[in-house]
Image (cartoon, rainbow, N blue to C red; front, side, top):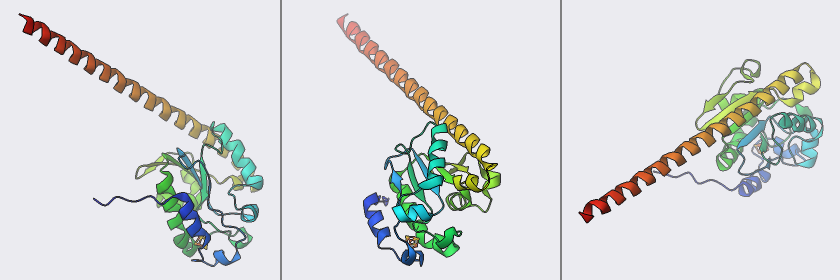
Length: 223
Ligand code: SF4
C-alpha cells in the first residue's frame, strides 16, 4: 500500500512563499501561511488574510484576532494550543470574498497543512472554510454549532469572528458555539480517559490471570 508522506510545514510554507498560482500572489505584502502548535489537537480554519494579516504575515491579528482570542478562552483554549490557518494564503484586495479559482489554486496548501498537522478537530470559521472542508453547499447559518465528520476529522463550523464586528447580534451565537465546542472537547477527553482506564484494568486482569495460571501450573507439577 502506498504511504502518504507528510510534507513538513516549513517546506510547505517555503513553497507557498514562491507561489503565484493566482493573481493574489502579485498583490500580497506577506504570505499568511498559518501559526500555532504543529501537533495541535484543534485546527482553526478561517477565510483569507485581511489588511493587518497581510501587513504582518500572521493570521487573525487586529480586531478579528482580538475577538478570536476571547472566543478561544471560552472554549478553554489558547492560541499556543491550536493551529490557525486560512483557506487562502494571500489577501484578496479590499477584503472581497475569495473567488472559486483562487480557492482551487490555493487549497492544496491547506490540504497538505491539515495532513501534516493531523488534528482531531477542525473548527471552520465562516462559509468558505466550512464549504471547502465539508464539501457542502450548505451555508454557515444552518451548520454552525453542530459536529460533523469528514474522513478522520471531526468538524465544528462556527461563524467567522469578523461577522460579529459588523453585526453584533452574531456575537452571542459565536460565544455559545465556542463554549459548546469547549464542552465537546472536554467530554471527548474524558471519554478517552475512561477508555484508557478500562484498557489498563483489562490488561491488569489479564496479567493477574496469567500469573495465577502459571502458579497453578507450578503447583500441579509438584504432585
Ligand atoms: S492565494 Fe494561494 S494560490 Fe494564490 S498566490 Fe497566494 S499562495 Fe498562491
